[in-house]
Length: 225
Image 1: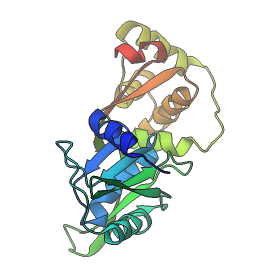
Image 2: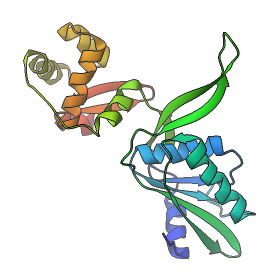
Image 3: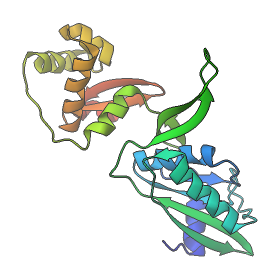
Image 4: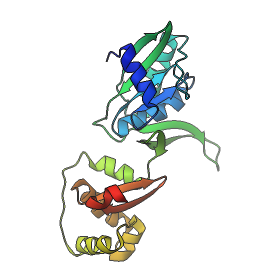
């Protein structure tokens, strides 16, 4: 990856979005690992280190130190590790480190953070999945994590009474949650989730994430939901 001055300016001018994030500097590999994993779990993106939130190009002090933090983040705070590329762009005497993360074929990538069990106070490792949504890194709901895991499996779909009931409901009410669907067809949440994930992968319905909440619509209604 090689970015020219002009390409850098275009990215900065566009602002933070689904595929671009600015960081004035990085100190914590654990924190920057959230962004790296979110891009890998979604559709890829570029982190520009040395660019402030207000689009000012401030540069970085040490390319080597910053690159080491990124390597540690991608390899020690994410599982499985996320491959990335870096490029240093010099702009008016200031260096910006661009980190390119491609959409991964090994989803989901779990962000790892050390915390303490509230009961025993023993150290434990929390595993969370982050997704990129507009200019934010959001914790993925369990249904979204299931969908990421299912991407590696062949699509198997049947169209029986449970699926027809769902289609009829969505044609009338336009949206449904996992809990609502499990109650509608009187099955467990786990079985309902399997049905919904299969239909999402088949392109019949669409999964929407609203913060930590998820809901489903028919595919042709996804844009207006």
